[in-house]
Length: 165
Image (cartoon, rainbow, N blue to C red; front, side, top):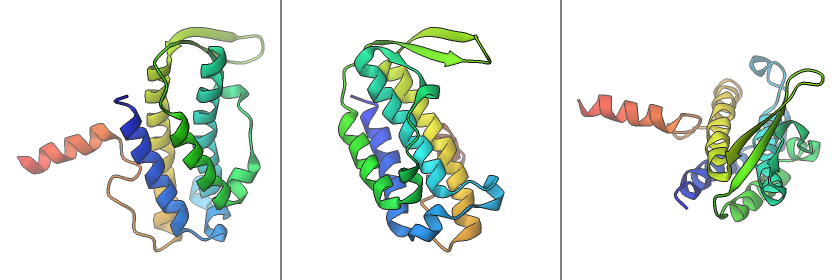
């Protein structure tokens, strides 16, 4: 599957960061992130992928109904284990799914989607949260991140094209 590589790369980048952090750095409330921690953003990324994989089995994905496992955000080693699990679950054939979203009380929306489309959504969602994690790393630690951490692939390609000119 063509989408497995970019997901693997993102999850590996996140895992490598978690390996470089202390648990205190992982769980610290970061003021510039409205008090969220790196662990909270990591948990959120993991849980959306988990919901996709869970929803794949039944044909319905509802990111809002995901389980919230606060152990993931309070212990970086659990976060690392969950990232490894996600990588092992990626390889699935594309199939039709229904995406369920809720906007307000009694306002449920169901739209047709598919596994690959939702993987793309999760890639973009992960990049967004990794960009926020980048802010936390820059403001709170001395850890050096790869230039691609938290940057969309389209932005990386654009930057490359500008350098080639």
